[in-house]
Image 1: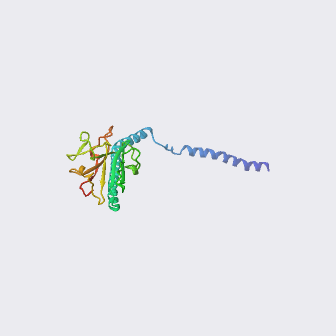
Image 2: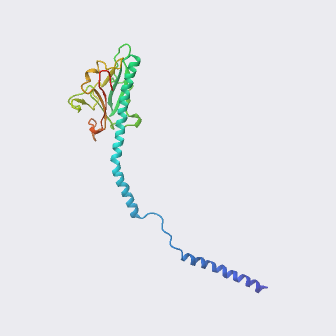
Image 3: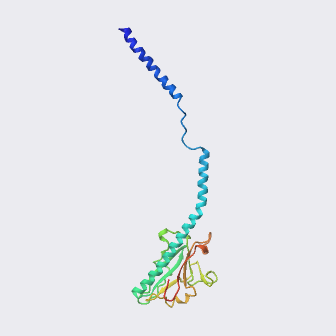
Length: 229
């Protein structure tokens, strides 16, 4: 019985010991697995391509962003003038729109003439109500210039269309006033000139705060005594 039991165990042992050898031989004949990832040269080429594309796209993107900023400020200027003109007609009171640049930020304020004819001067220190233009795009100081031909200094203003001058510095009273009919008052009329009252937004020349890039300018004009925009 002992011999029969050994005969049963020995073949199983040989078979069990043979199995790892067969698996090992199979592994030796498996094809080599490719290594994952990129080579150093491939990474360098990709980085260079990204850098070249970024260098090409950056100026176009900057131009696009600047145009959006100027367009946003220009639209707000137009809306402010239209709002003042509309309120003047509805309330039968004079309404004014004043402009200034404060801490390199273009600002606007709309206000009525009070019934007792008290003159409101928004340029007095402590006057509240000024709003930054371009708030929707969170325009930062110095990114957009505001210019007008209202109360300009002929020695420092920049010419537009020949004889009209626009100044990009906050100097004195830069105000347009509409009467109860929505027309320009006698205060604003003398500045009308040939090309109307001009309020312009522009991108500043690099390193300057009062010189605009000509190609970036957008203007709103009040062209007649009746207040045509």
